Image (tube, helix red, strand yellow):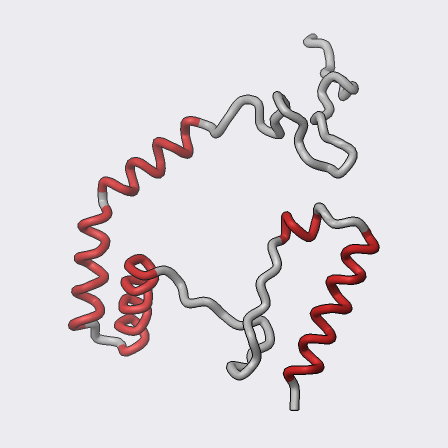
Length: 126
């Protein structure tokens, strides 16, 4: 019977005091599995066929929903998905907050950020 593997401090990821990875440490030291790369490469070999199929469905699909889905898929792949405002109100300015930037803030800085966003929203609303 093989010895059971124990979780020890040797196996724990090395992080700094603010939760960031320390130099020389990695959450995935083995890297990305080769199987995922193989599947991605295989799928990319069929890109032209898939695009041609989407174009055919978009142009002559029998169901309106299939044509819309194919056209949307083509646009998303060609131009990326459209951005969506957080508030849902087109008149309001965009809000851009990075999740990693927020994670690096202290609790006091987060409180100030939330207050600042709330103040901006209140000022922008009629």
